[in-house]
Length: 576
Image (cartoon, rainbow, N blue to C red):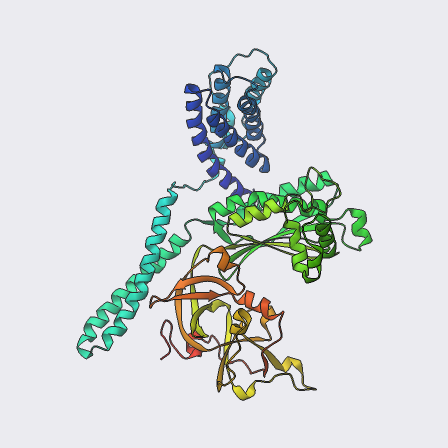
């Protein structure tokens, strides 16, 4: 069995055991209160989930018996049949059957008897139910040594988890304060040296323990995004067969992690987007031949972390989306006033597919429609504090990015001063720091010079707030970020302050929508600092004129240069 299939089965069995526990409780309620429709609906949903998950893994016996029970309960919840003793007995038999297959991992059990009984009952035939459990002992013995080791989970109330996270956050802030204590004691005189040394040791020990606790607690609710990705190969295969297209799903990384609740909730929006790509993105074989493309269309899933955000990408190499046609359709439907047409960028035109009631589909299919329900997709992502971004080029394909903030994360950050305020920048995204004399700044590249020998300089205060840069400084500090798009770009800051661990929290949606920002933190001295987003700054810079140009300086040749040493201060200390 392939590793991916093994992990999928492991997750299936672990999740299904929890569902079966709920179903068992609901069956007990069913016996006492057969008219409780809310309970019947709960039973239906549990069996529906098991059926859907098992069908992805081709666990046919589980799928067949859960589907039969789902059909039975669907009629019961619609009041097409009464919930009598026979219905209760049939559900109990299905539960016993599922428990044998899932809890004992005897997935090849013969389920023809309960499936047949339910079928006959729904046709109005009289049936006799044997209370004996349906277990194929011989088959059970054969698979006994082939069980998949499931992960054991302990259910913890969300309220308790949130309290633990809150306490951990306070511990981190306490650690920050304590780390300053030895420095304060030092100024009191040499007689406190011994006590200072002892406190220093205790602080170091506490720092190590709280960092370890923080790492565990902040990750306790995180699960791999790949858990969602792994359910889509079968979906794409079935879509391709139904549409008569040759489509391959390529899963790239899928190793980013998100809150468990978000991972569970994004499955439906992602399914809709993938169906859109297959139905209206990937062309027919004839159209791909005319466009001189490979016969096989490709839908790609990827996930990665940038700064304090997790990105999920759904892309295809199909026909793409024409922004101008989108705008025309929006005007036709009255979504966009005609007098506003000239102000729309291509990105704004593409984003119109998420407007309520918008669709470019000439006919609505049972699979999807480019724009049909896309407003619901966007709404569902927004409810999870996520953002939907779209890029497309006609004839080349479409990329849709779902961006979610990491709710809480510890980042090693460089704190800088800009316009008398403090801002943090993740150290892992900084390539180097370069100082220039004011005389080295040029308004433009000298005529006849090689442009590759010069760096573009951008003012962060100008990019974010439109403020003018102070041109009177004799020494100017710049930062270069680690990104392909930032190879020739430098960003001005006023001063380097310190390098510290920062507990970064996501911002409210209104503030988070502001470009260039990605979170906020409380520093060791109790002040609040905003964390900048280097990727966003690079994106903004690519659309405006540079503040100045400077000659390229040769990078320090020293191997493994520590950024703190490079900037002139030690880890965690401030610049005097």
